[in-house]
Image 1: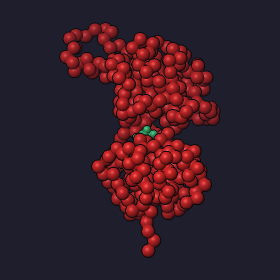
Image 2 (image 1 turned 90 degrees about the vertical axis):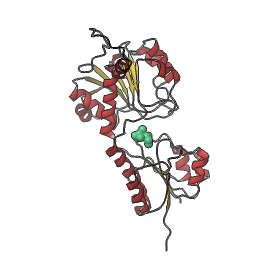
Image 3 (image 1 turned 60 degrees about the vertical axis):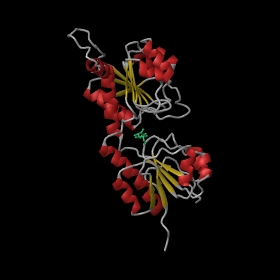
Image 4 (image 1 turned 90 degrees about the horizontal axis):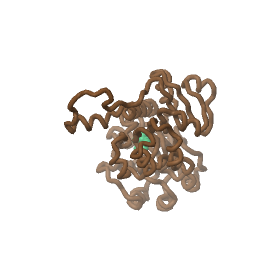
Length: 328
Ligand code: 8YV
């Protein structure tokens, strides 16, 4: 009898997806949803052939050295900055992610956060809940126009394109973007988006949406210097990754009203949030929920499971993020 590959599911996920995996593998699930330290994760993975992870488990050289049987790590996330890809490539361990299935849901949320930020929805709700609403006034919580304004997008992958389409076709916005590579003209036309330099993007956007992957190159892509180039009336929205924005510099810019407002779904060092961001009123804060609808999260979990099944049964993952030589 051949033994089944052993899989670790590193966080609590949909029971039906764990059951599906159990039809193919010997599965160890983390039903208690324990947040393992790196050493605990390595101990759990030491005798496993594969893992289903979320963005919060770091897969690096130290962990890989402790897990000699490991062959694949299937991330239940489109972003994979929790992977040390050179170390995984060197160890012959494949990484996969979950693109496409979350694109529209995440773009919806980006737009929701933009609207909430520009129109001061949470700030005004706090005011109402605090019993401070006594009467109407013409400029009470007056915000920024969304329709017809200029939407700037930094990073123009699938999610950026979804946001561009919403802005251009739904809200009549002028959409400008900056990206490492320019889109093909047909795609630019479909998105209603115009390519500009990063400097032009910062200077011209009424609303700046960050949708780029995190890497050493994108670390603090928005810091004090970039915030200083933005319009004082501008809003900034980050649904990409913590670390792309220098949160300390942003808190200072918001306090000094160097920019009007920010909407943040991701934070440097999350789940910790920079204490000064919690003190300023002109920021909308959400706990990394841009992909959080149950149908989308189920599709993400199923795609991560499908990557494991395809890898062990057909020898190739469906959505790999690199192409290591698989020695094991
Ligand atoms: C995930 C995300 O929920 O897909 C991503 O990159 O940021 C979110 O959709 C999160 O990373 C947990 O895996």
